[in-house]
Image 1 (spheres, rainbow, N blue to C red):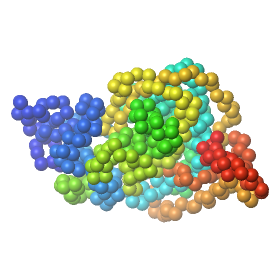
Image 2: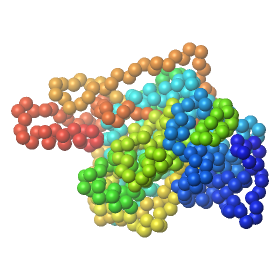
Image 3: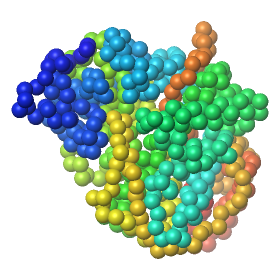
Length: 523
């Protein structure tokens, strides 16, 4: 087996060697899979850092060698230097020499496909540009309003019972409801779609069937948008000047859906767990010393939804973190270990609120473009839940909580809670409105911001051919969440425009701030 490391992977350790334990494989290298890696990833990262420094040799499934990048600055260099570390998996030497078979458990992650997640340079810019340009057209205020409505709909299902599992009854469903609305297929949201999205990334016997179900749903959506254009994310991808084929659009939507769903569901569950188990979180939230968005940001440092991202492949021989990397070597972006790098976090108990230097969304040209949508789903959803059920308590001992994991993520299995039963909240029955930004007339002193014009794509299509095979794409980037957008032109009734009165009474500033706060949160 070809290996980038200075040892013979087939050499067995002596009988009394600790390397005989399940977490260590050929050559004494630690496995990035199996019980130790899944049950205590943080402990594994500490061992690797102590043994190898900021870049460590590891073994993937089947004891295939790779590098796990542990250092914060080394991960930034890895993600920001595509000239040295490419996203094109065809460079992997283990693939070229047959060390990795087509049916490898990680094949769905690394199998090359002609889409932006496996591309660099001009091709990446063209395809990713279609995604980011389309996300710039989303009405972010409308999205927040839908998140709040969906959150309360989910809470209604269990609010009168006094107990719930916040993973299966809340965190696993809210992101799918929101993404279906953004895509333009709210009618497709159901339990089967949620379970298929969760199942298809786990390497189960039913993963292929789950993937087929999602592809079928998205294919129907794209066919509808070709025939009947609509102002939603799928429609914008179809009509984008990048002229992507139907297969390209379907496959980009598939990976956007799965990546957005998996990461956001994990993030919501992790935030709720920290709120329920860490006294500092609950006390500071209750006392007004911490906002939910700040709690989300702290969680992105401590428990990122993705622990690592596979992969990057060395373009040529190079050096990283004191290790000699050979051309064709595979590397993993170590998100969780980078966030605990002692050089950036010497004290892991320190408050990281307001600090977005974490790598929860990776970095460089392939940084997750949908991170603000993920943040919005988490902070609005958690806030709505805590507003409805302020006396939430963990229903089991913290030691009883369980996770399932793999090299990329750690998923909380259940989060049982108890609370005082509360009545259901009346929700409007209006159909989902379109989420496109729309310019509407504004009067003097109106408390709103006009929609920013959507720029024409700057990339040139000359000489480029669209990809025609299925593939993967990163999450889309919404318009920046700190720039409010106007109310959608159709669908839901818009709230009355708040106007600053002429002669202000003493309470006017307070009322104005309350109006702005409600407007921003989509209430």
